[in-house]
Image 1 (cartoon, rainbow, N blue to C red):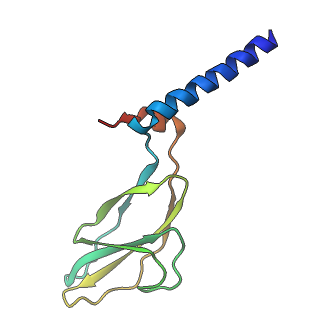
Image 2: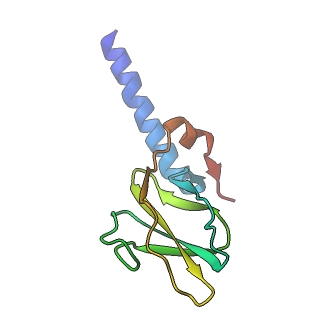
Image 3: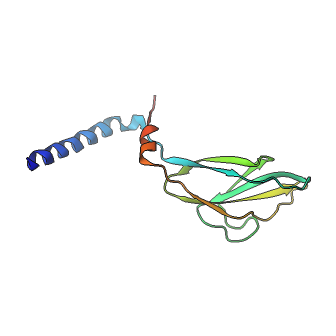
Length: 130
């Protein structure tokens, strides 16, 4: 009986491998996530906009350009969704403001988020290439 179960399991794995090998290039599985950032607007009327700095390492200093790999100018929005962040990585985020003349503030408090897509969410979001 155990031999039959083992033979069945091996056969099933081989079947899945061949199906994936021939049809896997048509399947898209979600492997990236997102982070939504919200912050309180500055009371200063001279504020023209905000910049989000982020990366997979903590910053090295208190003011730009200290240590973040990415920067997004979001204008005068006070929330922003960053998409396409790879699953399994931890990201570090800070926000700055800048005024009409382009002078930029130092960083806000650093926040972190680990992108962790649950297995069922990966399965639910399987799509097929056309």
